[in-house]
Image 1 (cartoon, one colour):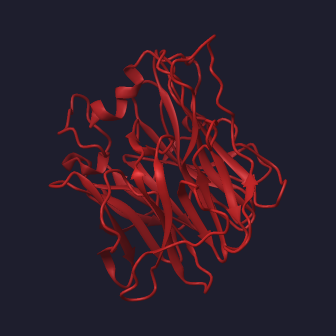
Image 2: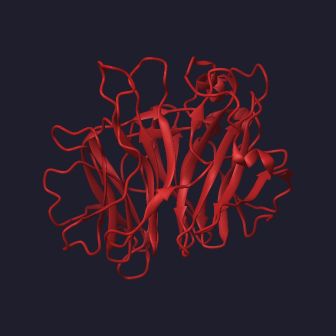
Length: 367
């Protein structure tokens, strides 16, 4: 696992070694947490209304299934089939107020990326958005019927009431993804503010840079997402921006300062994960960083209009995934990687036996 987590750091990438992850200034703290369930093989959790859903690696098939946890029912495998990469699943309140799960299915899927696992959807194609009612026994996934979506390849869908947000792959002749919002499924979509546009940093690029979104969460006032800018294979890695965009037409959007992802050719990396749009328009997220082969994870919040990051770095453990549900945070608590632990090549840290991952919940975080 140690090799997998830090492989990207060893690449010769063009980023300054002096860049320091903002979460590193926070001292490790004991975070009270209630143990909920086994999380072996778990990755990319999402939570709302008492449901926690995560992708789980099935070792024999080397594919991922979706698992739902509730206090009443424990763990259950959802009837959505399996996938070669973790699902772009997002739990939210549906039109009737109950919990629903949004996800995509693709003809050509994205690819699993590191340092901590996420899915790069920049080259996914033929993707359709689906929804599953988590409150109804025997419910099956159904395709989301969205106005003027014919011909669009949609990933990372998120539902809130009658509103749906998703990311459309670049249109013909473009390399820029579009973050779209349907205020109601029958309404024409609005385009929300995205991130940095792709641009070739050289005189010519054999492979054009592209943009995409790794994860997206629709809140009452804003959408929070991870904006990926791929670079051509000349020694520069992908850029990951943690961003927030107002759900109002023409509303503001911007990058969360000092949470942008990078990998240093000399030493260290920073990676935002698990964005969650807060009720106040702020963003909660997981921040992974390594100031030089010492992996750190921070359960973080950035309030609307504030430059101050609050939250905590778990002492004696790592958060390999996080999902925010109002004041609670559900996280995948696991043991730190040990030096020289090469593991068995598992694509997610929690698939390693030495990680001993558990799903836990914390009701509050140190300020």
